[in-house]
Every structure is written in C-alpha cells, then in structure tokens.
Length: 241
Ligand code: FPP
Image (cartoon, rainbow, N blue to C red; front, side, top):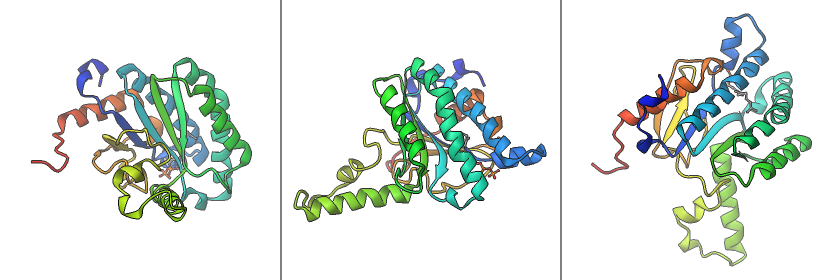
C-alpha cells in the first residue's frame, strides 16, 4: 500500500496500536524474545515516519502494560532498560521531526526512578512541538487510568471542590492521563490476536478495530497505510443510523 491512495481529508485523528507478536517473531527465527523487541523498535520508528508522512496528529502505542510485570523478571528488566536506551537513541530524532512525546501510565513504584526521569525529560524537551503527538503507553492499563481518574474525582468531591451530582463524562475525561487527546478513531492490533487487552478503554469507545496477521517486527509504514485505508472504507455511525 502506498500513501497516495489515502484520502487525506478523512484521516483518523488518533490511531492506537497494540504492538503484539514480538516474542513469536523471534521464536520463529530461533532467537530470544528480546530480539523480537529490538526489531519492534525498527518497526515502531518506520511507523512513526509513515504517520508523519501522511499527517497523522495523534499516535498512541502500547509498549508495556500494567499486567506485563508478570513476565519473567529478565524480560521485564530488558524492557525497562530498552525503553531507557530507546529514548537515548531516538529522542533527538523525534525532537528534530517536531514530534511531541508523551507517556501515559502510572509513574510510581515499581517503575524505575531513573527511567521515569528520562521519560519526563523527553516530554519536557518535546513539549513545544505540534506536528504530531506520539503517546507511549508504558505501565499503562485502561482500568488503572479510569481508577486514577475516579480517585481524583473522589478527592475533589471529598474536599468540596466538586459536586458528585455534577460529575459527567466530560469531568472524567478531564482527569485522564492526557485529557487533550481526541478519541481513538482507529485501533490496530497486530499478530492475529483480537482483543483490547486493557488498552485505551475510555478513549477507544467508538474506535474502528483493525486486526492484522502481521507480527509487530514486520509492521511498517505500509502496513499502517493499509490499516488507514481499511478505516476509510468503513462507515462510522456513532450510534446513529
Ligand atoms: C508484545 O509482544 C510486545 C511488547 C510487550 C513490547 C512492545 C515493545 C516494542 C515494540 C519495542 C518498543 C519499545 C518501547 C519501550 C517503545 P509479545 O512479547 O507479547 O509477543 P508474543 O505475543 O508473540 O509473545
């Protein structure tokens, strides 16, 4: 799929991607799982390049979930160090390309303090950019995000700053990790799995779901363009007829 086939006037405002299948990709080649994650980085940055090429404004990728702590300790450690090294390798590039980087997810323990500092440093460095926002969901869970928002609403209500009967979808939205992010229009999951796995539960309420058999390390800008083309073939009704 080449990008000129896409209708630029009907791009999804926000694309979410569940980058799945790194482990299987490595297994098929007799490589350790971590080699799959390493190739996943190449896939991710070609996808970012493709997103910039077609003019996407918001891209959110699922890099580490609140459930991923249950993986073998060696893999968890690898993914923590990998995220840190990836920021060292890529932050300049993202900055030059005018990509605003944001992390969504919990930042407290057991997240390594040093990693959180680097994440926040990358956010600060790129905060002024407006070409595209790349959100990296790291130690992210859709339920955790809603729990955190509910907790904040409860605190404000208990302190008398918020009337419980005035709580609306808008007030909850305003307490999500990134209140400014538009709803996800297109949600892509790779590797043939057809689940949401706790990703952007609130934001993707009306998303078009596209599942591809491609394992994440084989994904690239052309697979992204094909997913956007599939999105453009769908009729979106938002509960209307
Ligand atoms: C899912 O594949 C992938 C992950 C849990 C990690 C995704 C990480 C990257 C693509 C690298 C980029 C990293 C950052 C920090 C932005 P899996 O391991 O579940 O594969 P499997 O389902 O085949 O076992």
